[in-house]
Amino acid sequence: MSYESFFGFSQQPFSNAPESRFFFESRQHSEALVRLMHCISTMKGLAVMVGDIGCGKTLLARKLLENLEADKTYEAGLMVIVHSEVTAEWLLRKIAMQLGAKDPGEKKSTILPALYERLMEIYEQGKKAAVIIDEANMLVTREIFEEFRGLLNLEAPGQKLLSITLIGLSDLEQNIALDPPLQQRIALKFTLQSLQEASVSEYIKHRLHIVGCDRELFSPSAYKKIYQFSKGIPRLINTICDNSLLESFLIKKDAVDEDMVDGVGGDLGLKK
Image (cartoon, rainbow, N blue to C red; front, side, top):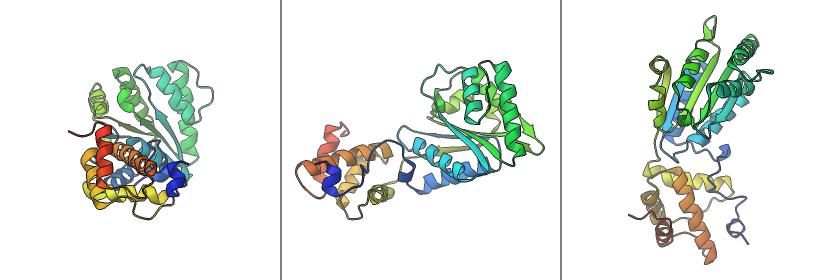
């Protein structure tokens, strides 16, 4: 028997895999989503969101894409940068393909005309083109940011043809500064913070509700200890809760108390 069966969950509630239905609308996460949607809907050009490791940036990016895809007036794509050896040509080609450009080729001389043609098609259809780039802090060359600036210069009467949202660690701001003219084109910048202590219990209850559990599984003191160890970082909250539920299952206890969380925190090396 798994702990999911023991507690009656439909699935694991605290997986760190980004799944948009687990998106928790804290005040700041909701604000970030509204601000980013506004920047895209008004085609202001470049939006930048930064935040520390594990604070929920990737899940927010997925939720943003989901909102755009649900609205048929957008043609949107999401890219995740997995290493820093990305070239400008590779990135341009991926953006073109994300937006549905046909046969953009491999070189900038063919990619840019194909991308521009596709952006004009989207505009003439009465739609708006948007690209979200997660882990954008992995983009480290001035050439890439110069290309972003060029894309933001593509316009139709009264409107930019492409909205770009860059999401990443705080290094992203320093990288963008490699191209000062692009830095001046930032229409929106938002810093995503960790959850406040009062929001931690609501976050945990939200994820439990999603998997079909609405009873209290964590004691009030357990919530306090989880915040103490996690500092409100969602990824750490998930890891602590997952391990605490596993420990509870192993001793066949139907709730998690402070001592159990304290033991998990020690095992994870979170005690100071």
